[in-house]
Length: 517
Image (cartoon, rainbow, N blue to C red):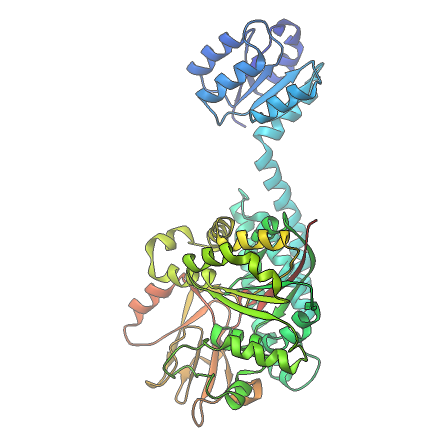
């Protein structure tokens, strides 16, 4: 352990000699002085890791000295030590951003604890977290071998995300590598689970909540006439991103229920979000509403009729008496406009807001160098999402919703994954362009890398043409054509894509929240 430099300021420093000896034996180097003015001069000329500062001194008081020290080096933690327990002194000290507050007489162990808390805090937490995860790692590995239901996959994924968030600031790179390897193994097994079970979910009732059943199963029961409800659909929001936003949301709302539901395949907006609002599979949408549905190769926007789909679904569910409004936000200006006028939405029983920012963020990582730098990995991607949310019109809207006593529902249509490895695919010119799924007639591919659906109707998908097949990339793979292969691979590697099969894309949040009073 390196030597820690401590500045201790107290007008009765001679009485603290036993404390100083106690700390010096533990490799702390103590610089002692008896006044605020002396402390300021020493502080200017030497480097310290922490300062212990007596509040009640002749001449410059502790609070006055604190102010001067913070002006010189604001990042150095200062621990205030005082005989007084008066509330205003504590408030003044805390308002001046002290690191800790101790009441005299202090014993050596109190000082040592304060040192460790302020200087070794991150290291100690990191070591303890790593130790706890190592114990949990074995349990997760054993659970992974026995996971055989969609419920247990949801619980396992929650555990993995919990530890990922716990370890993300860890100083132990080895633990992060172990976790990443465990996530890769989980995704590999999850792909096999989907391969084996997904088609059956469209034939029997023993299926998880899917995109096209979410509204009926989870949203509709929360809608009541006379009770304003805000449904926020954040496009492309992963579960880990929601967990980073949750703390901010929980300042205004209490989480009543949180669950993970399953996005349909392809995990893409055109399919999953249309399915959510229509309450129908893509094949059913094409059959019932041919004017509203467009296949991959069709010209024109693919999600232009979500409001129409929603209205039709509300009627089918016997909720036509519900006053509702659908709003799509695709830019900052539209978000600000909604925030300015949100009060008027309190007359609605249901207000649906589709917010597109996160999806745009994931796509811009591919195109923009600055976003590539800021979101170079999942930690950066989460951080960027959190920063956006904390400064977005959406947070303003949620704050207003709380004040207006809205119930709040937050969900998404699908997630996304950081793709790492290419898988070669060959198709004709009518083959769809998505990097995580392809549909077409003449597809050649690596069978081990994909889930191939030769009969799209069996999983609720339309057939674009006779003999068309859907293939979905597994884990962190992305499809690449042999033509100009190396350029293609280097361009898309380490970008965020969706449409395929991974825990990150398929298992997505649905959250019910009540306003704090």
